[in-house]
Amino acid sequence: MGILSGPVSYLRFVVPSPADGFENAFCEALAQHAFHEIDPASDVERAAGWVQFEDAFASEWDPQTLLHASGHLLLRLRVDTLKVPAGTLKAYTAREARDRCRELQRDKLAKREMDVLKLEVKQRLRKRSLPKMALLEVVWNLGTGELRLLSTSKAAATLFTDVFEKTFGLQIRPVGLLTVLWLRGMSEPEIDGLSALEPERLHLLAR
Image (cartoon, rainbow, N blue to C red; front, side, top):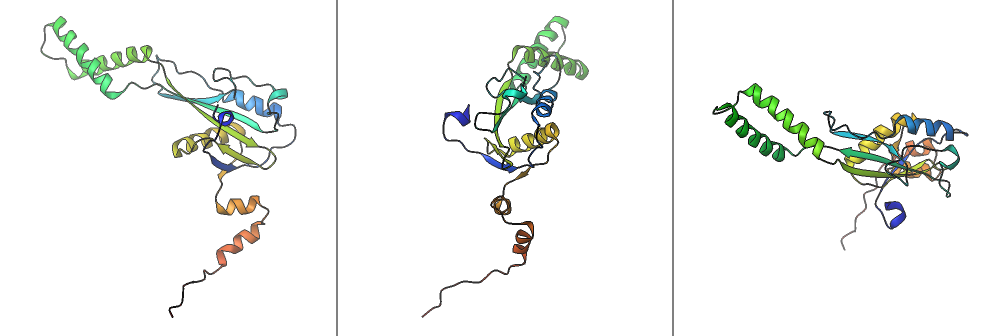
């Protein structure tokens, strides 16, 4: 667990604070968007969903223990990818095609036959492969509304934002300079007024 093991890099977001008594609703929302493993017999290449922070294979939550002792909500988004590399698929398909041509005593297979063969080989390879697992850790300070995603990947941030907003029905926004000012107590009119300021041109006068 990155957050518990030492220094980490992260992206910051802000989100509206939930209403009191949110624990039951949050547990239900997490369960509805929990992680489900990829069926190798399907054509699904990526699956994403919530798992327990302490166990990447558990997806049940208890309202009584939902919050960490620190008062933060610790979340984990599991992302599995099951994809046969293009080069591997090409090599195995070529070998199967040669064997099939020998059996049929033909020089080559028709395009339709090759398409069917390629699909069969892909399905067999998927059943022999393990998905690549990634775990995105999230720390949510419910008091300040600050979210920290323990990743600096743009793709991870995009996926996390999409799943988070669908799960909790709350819109999040990345923390930039203006957001920091808002978090530190500056009012919206004061922040808006910054755009009307004219920059000063500063330079050293030649002697």
